[in-house]
Length: 326
Ligand code: BTN
Image (cartoon, rainbow, N blue to C red; front, side, top):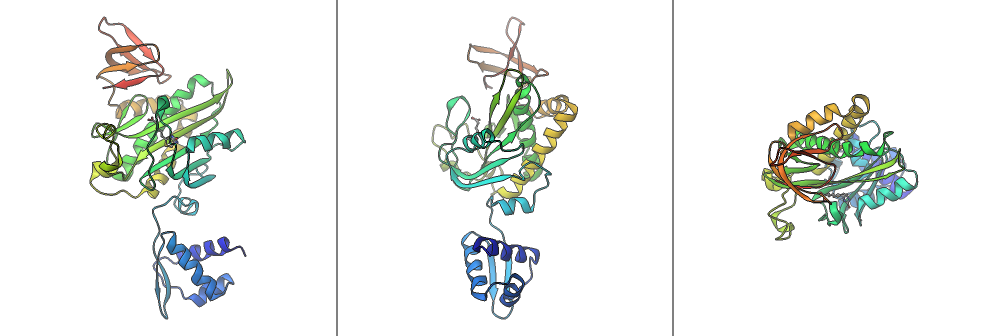
């Protein structure tokens, strides 16, 4: 049997008997490997961050699993039926969006997820970079293949914000606000950004890649002095570290749930949830679109997710894209 395969089996066996001590002899018999192989696998698993107690005469006991996105750990607690079931995991990668686009070009199915512990070339909206240090955040991309016209793709970016906000709220109790179109704010600062990339023909979407960057356990010193006044993390807002793995599993669950609801019921439920969490509507805003800078009061989002802003003269302008300052 392949080394990796039998290591995985040792882990599965211990996971199945979590909290119990399993002797080296039992493991070796059940898995048909030598006691030395068992010991080597235990050592390797410890290196990966699994806490395994070893006691003479009693054997091994799995005490805790690492807060990493190892595919087997993600799968172990995943409540989705299709989203994230095809998972690509990297310790470090340039950009998960880039990898996801290459996979999508190669025919990867809807629901494929790419996640990395760190990104060396994380990309944000408007050509900005996205800081993605190791083990401090959730940096991932999802491939979707919705059967709608490209005009409706922007609804998905709002949907992603609604889903991620719901997951954060459920997992931590913190209710993030959504700044149009899909920045999540906590304490007035950005805690999560979403980069949506699309490949489409004039009348049909080939795929959408939703790339989410959520600052989970970043400390103030992790941000550059220019970014710090604008950015925050769940750790900084809550004053305690947050376990990333269950939060990621909840995000995937919420994404799948909202996406299916959107397919069945259309944009209305997403629009309502977005408006409830919005920190943009009713506020004086400045919208920086590629055409102009426009000031006014954000009054609503329309059926396509565009932002409606009433200017000083009472005229209402519609923005499909742009950067909003509050
Ligand atoms: C923004 O500017 O608000 C969007 C930031 C999106 C960052 C995420 S991190 C995972 C994925 N891979 C990337 O390169 N970017 C997105």
